[in-house]
Image: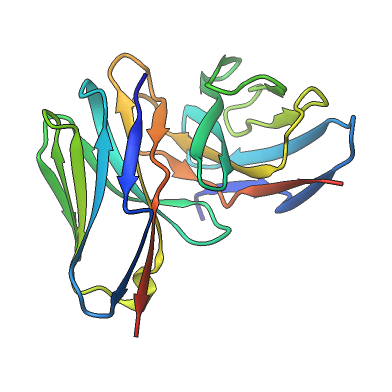
Length: 113
Length: 112
């Protein structure tokens, strides 16, 4: 059974710092991996989707990488801002499971002034 | 505006009562999903539907039921058989296959 883990569970950084969020998964037979953002009490917003054949995806200050063989993905946030404060979730679609996402428990990020 | 709407934002259930959560999308997406989110546990899949008039159980379907009579709508009923229904419920849709899923704003269900 696929398990997705995100470490750390919470992170606090001063504004302007570059930071890395980690996601690991136990079964490397994935179709794609997605990173989402969730603000308190709200739904999820898709940030980046990496297909299994890709190594990374970039959107603005965000860069996500994928290493299938080691079962890891990282989300790099450059020049963090207070508006980046949210919970970040990663999720995988495993090969042969249609479109079912398996989620990690998330990293709660706080960017302080 | 295209998107996914969920209603109500908050829902209160009395013991033994069935309640229905609404999910509507105007993105012309074939696939729709229901997830449950509990503190510290991430999201878990309840039911999903890849096409009208067809749906499959997810990982935690017991105590829930769904219907998919229209492409735009995927209501979730929380039955009295669900003994621990208090959670945040999220609906999502995608264009099918393994594309990005787009999420609604969620419904918080509380038990009186």
